[in-house]
Length: 97
Image 1 (cartoon, rainbow, N blue to C red):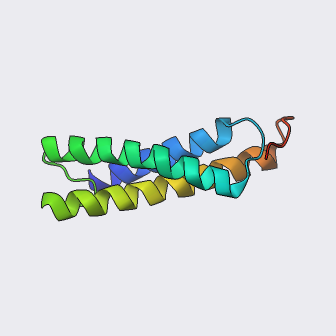
Image 2 (cartoon, rainbow, N blue to C red):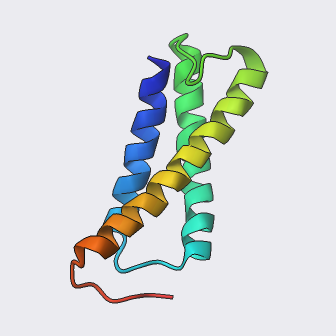
């Protein structure tokens, strides 16, 4: 079940990157990914703690902190890949800075 948390986070990030209008600047995408990823990762880490299924298999406060960091990085990676997919599919949107 631990892998599912990471996959969900990655796919939500990819969906966010793909649905964002236009190619995003990587720095703004990174900052937005950190903010949204931290929130999403914290929610998943707390849900994992409450359901006794930690997101990356580590228990306790250390596990929660590491889970938040890993899930945030997965969200950012998904966001970048989603943005690349949007650019490759050329959906006719304009570039924003």
